[in-house]
Image (cartoon, rainbow, N blue to C red; front, side, top):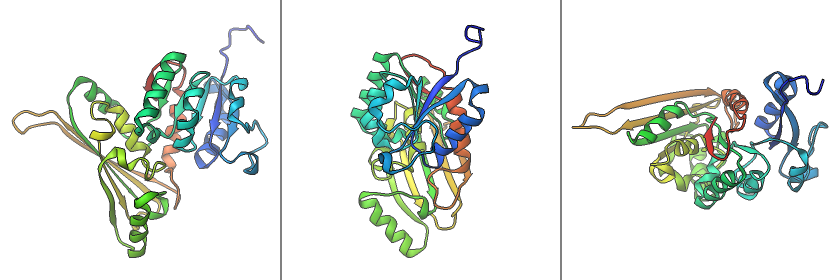
Length: 285
């Protein structure tokens, strides 16, 4: 009964209905209520010409305010956050599954400002990033000297644009392992935004380094058709040539050609459950 003291479910809207959006929608429908969440709507780019499942479709994001959701989960494309994130944060918390959008300084400024003004939380899910809390603590303490992230994928899993597309095509033609990019993270994000979200999460965990200070390395490897391999190298501030150094390697099983690894879907489900409202700030989940 209403008023019985039972906690109300937080209504969740999902932006995007690819593999990850379908997975989260199914989990919310099947298991959301015991966790304190319910599915409020599902939206996908492309409008009515791209069909949605019968439950709870939202065709126009301009109608989002009328849905009464408390949390919006973006798992679509960075452009969605760039175009609609500020408006979403006036009405609800936002779990940003495409943090590569924040490589654009103006987008980061606008979304941080909207979260502060609206009293809503901009959540950054850790996704495939291993050890983000440790990176965040070191950065906050001023003991993080360097951070590099290497992502190795099958060429079929890469969604490259610009000049990177030509380099990827060359790697595919050769059939051999190829380093497609090595350098600061910021220029890489707009070239393959759907692939580098774990790298972007690392930059957000280490704001002293940020998108310009975090080093990125993107590797196309035909020999790993059903794996996503993420290597994170952390170097602490040292003295006399001695410094903390930590390297982690995460091998994530993946459907051949998929952008998102299998275990990353479970990571997103755990992150969603942590989005319980933390006020007007940016927060990892």
